[in-house]
Image 1 (cartoon, rainbow, N blue to C red):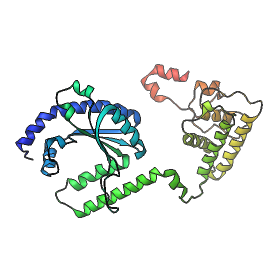
Image 2 (tube, rainbow, N blue to C red):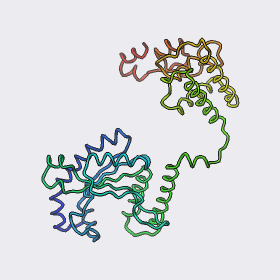
Image 3 (tube, helix red, strand yellow):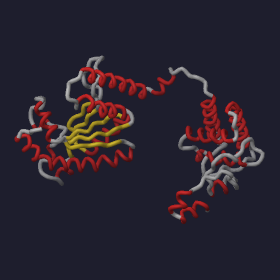
Length: 341
């Protein structure tokens, strides 16, 4: 689109500064976002978009522009927002913030309401760069995953069409209402889950009993706390998969689970139980128990990742279904040899 020369001149003057701001902010925040598991996106506003914004008549002077450079940090839920703001305050000079929920809106209105942080480079960073850069304000949006998905999907569908469509705007608002409801449920997940009607499902009950039993063994000191799994959910899934491998009848798995828990608990609670291994994993400990002669289970059909710990600490000498490190054998014979050892 044709851009007024006055706008083009002003934009050309600040564009090099905006690119310096982008480089600094990006290098400052991207590592933080990668480490924290957040998504990071940024952009320098193009001159066409800027010209259209100025034509809207809502900006009175050039110094009021606060999003010539803008970035978005996407967090899982709104509970992460406070930590992000602390990070921003530590890295930049805050000029303003518009928190979610502070904008006045009627109860039946649903629209963009993401937290926006406005800042400038700290004096120490500005002094190392071109003159005038310290006066430019940039925007950091802190959006939840659902908010970002809504704004990204609906923006092009609604605002980049050739017509002003009431139905599309209405649908976008309805989707925003759904996003707000999802956010509310996630924010109060534990409390809301209490109200969910529960249907009995044997597999879930089995896995919960596995977690409860092994947590009690650790709490009572029968099992070393150093073997606490990183994820109890994954541990329960793996133990149940092991039980399923030697219990083909799904209706018999509840009893099989109870039998394994009872047998394992008796063994490690007895006064003459051997010392707990200090390395390996709790699941390897279960595999080692099932692999002993005379126990209720069997390892014949379960794929086992063999290791020195499995052999020396948990007594599993032979694996009928052993995990094969075939990729390492193809790419690095030395690595394959190390895995065998």
